[in-house]
Image (cartoon, rainbow, N blue to C red; front, side):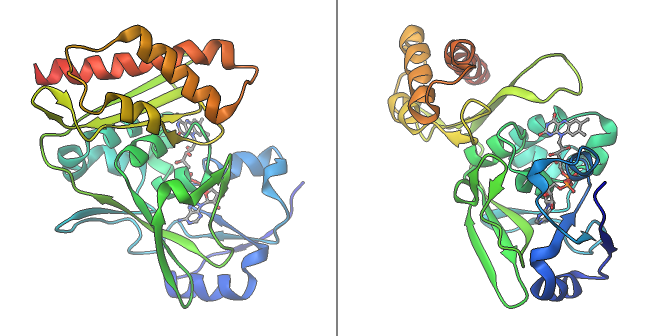
Length: 289
Ligand SMILES: Cc1cc2nc3c(=O)[nH]c(=O)nc-3n(C[C@H](O)[C@H](O)[C@H](O)COP(=O)(O)OP(=O)(O)OC[C@H]3O[C@@H](n4cnc5c(N)ncnc54)[C@H](O)[C@@H]3O)c2cc1C
């Protein structure tokens, strides 16, 4: 059994001060829907820690701010908050689509966007939409604040660039104009309370019937969720009515293998990623026609 002491700071300042002193021995707890399962299972991923610091009620980290050029989502916003936010639904419906597929009502009420990112699972259902939206993350320590692209923050499966004295405080999403369309796809083993076998987020605008600024992010197809830059390049400026399905299926599968190598799941996933991309593109095309 894992033994630890519980800490409950009153505010962010106090949390960061304690992290500065004892960060190496501390695990942060937000909604607990990933972490408590790992503690219960005595997971190898946990490493050693002496303190569990509950940050779930720190004020100010659960707000959604509408800035001129960005939407800022507090790391402690729950999936339910994201689903219920008219602001997010209006600007980034793909994030709402992703959040709606997460777990069950209970999980969505507890689980947070910050926890989904920091857990670093390749299958996390908010990471792919956030990558396709070119999001960045803001981290705070006692004396420093830094911002980096989400893609750089995720450094490996279940690994991030978070330093031991830092808390992820905010997620920053650049605004896009209303011409942009999006699609979120999730392949899962059953209809409800199911982790993604593969997920996909596509965000694009269409100019003169051609894909323009197209972003394609896959989760669980590669060791970490990642944008498929070659496929983005291939599809940019392609007429939406002239898609070559066979070559998209072939080249998306190829790009997956180039990034991930051959794995036990490759024979299944290689054709599925391309087919999923076609499904997403067709959904988007239906919207604009
Ligand atoms: C039954 C079940 C079904 C699930 N279904 C899905 C699903 O369909 N899709 C999906 O994506 N996920 C799913 N999950 C996983 C989980 O619910 C989500 O990843 C959730 O968003 C995690 O958030 P949390 O607040 O509960 O994180 P926690 O468990 O509290 O923390 C997760 C990790 O992030 C760290 N952390 C949390 N917040 C911060 C912060 N602000 N700064 C720095 N580090 C932080 C913690 O230290 C820990 O390492 C499921 C989980 C369960 C138990």
